[in-house]
Image (cartoon, rainbow, N blue to C red; front, top):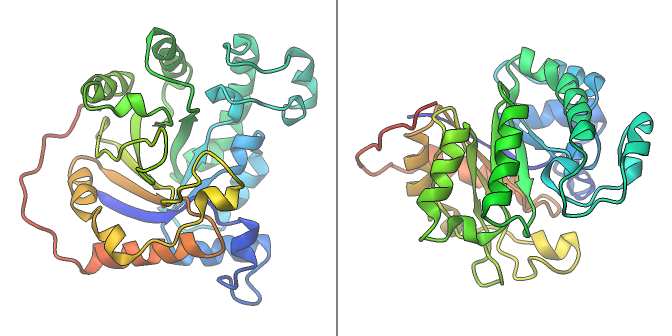
Length: 302
């Protein structure tokens, strides 16, 4: 059985900071991370989607967390084909950046950005705190030859780095295509990110328990808001998980943990303290609920 780690998709969200979850005296940058890491063994860094990380921050994150803590770090927006403001790039690279479209970005620019991105994260990798680089592809990134070429390109560029992939286009996990998608990620050495979200909304990504590398499996709980895809961030992610809703995932999580060295369970319903409360509840369920006896599927090749 793999090591199951439960956490949230941010520890710095302004609504969390003002919710009262952090006690007085622990609300500065250092205090927040130390307090969070005393309670959870993994967290997702989402600021790296909006701009490149810095080596200084990586050093501070490593310094402020215990041995064995994990950071799953979101890929920069340009890496996954999202619209990216020129101002988000380092000043010396902005001249190379034209208005972003859904076409492939300049590969020379991507190569340089990738080198800087990974160099900044090296302190996390060196200290054993890097869980995965999370590539969250946009809803228009559907299956097909072009998308597979992008994935192969990134598999080559990211060789030696742990990459986890979340698809926002539901067709990747359509029952008729599920095995093909899983085989593709397995061949590329990329971990699958499974999701929980409202299934009543248009283009909902179905929940799956796919494991494509024995190194790591990831599940992100987005909440079950019916405003997914529209409205404000608060509208899209506002949801308070009940214990019953979380318990529905226990058989899947245990099956996934049986096929991977680590399973990261991350809550993205980052409205006030909803994510940390859900993470606390899930941690309790995993600890106290008796697991059913079931055969363990063979682990995929690394």
